[in-house]
Image (cartoon, rainbow, N blue to C red):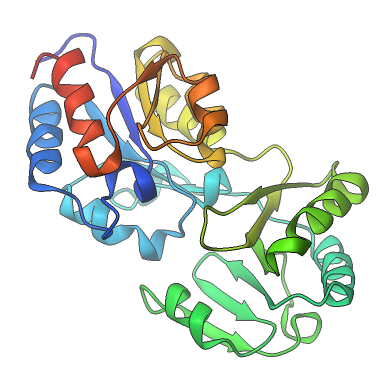
Length: 270
């Protein structure tokens, strides 16, 4: 077995997953070889656990997982490991809702782990968020939310996204971090300030006693930037946005060309 194992952190959308949201057979084969050689494989995603657990099972993982870009980290196979859930203060959430309403947004939703709260009824988004069968409540968030939340999503017109983000930065920079989703969605995702995938990944690396230089992290979008900067091998996918390529110290092929598998095969000599 490997005496100096690597910790391999996989982003899902645009990275491990092909555009049709499946994992290729080749990727599965190489990841299985990496595990057999003694390396540790985990998932670090912006998705909730309920919509990433099928990939966790498909890869037969037995490791902790980073969800909600680091705001929720737990170990699906080991309750003793601990659960790290970092929430947004309800008072701040309500202030953001008040302002967002004035911006003529399409919708807002809040997630509390696996419960989803929609401000307005929304067939298109309901479809995206119904994966994994969450409890869904629809109606005024100011009335329906009784607890601090894991994340808020604002779905706005393309031309309003930057205005809303500017407001969040100017008014709430101390308490929230926000990201923009990849096209075609004009969605702003808000989580507690200071949360990102690197924070979650560092918890996992510490647990396995793996130093950052033996962490290989793959990503393509702006929610991967901190994780790629943290990892000794910060690997940008061929399809990554320019900001990610600028931070990464390694690169590989696109998600459609099994970029993750090709990189691991070469670097780990699988």
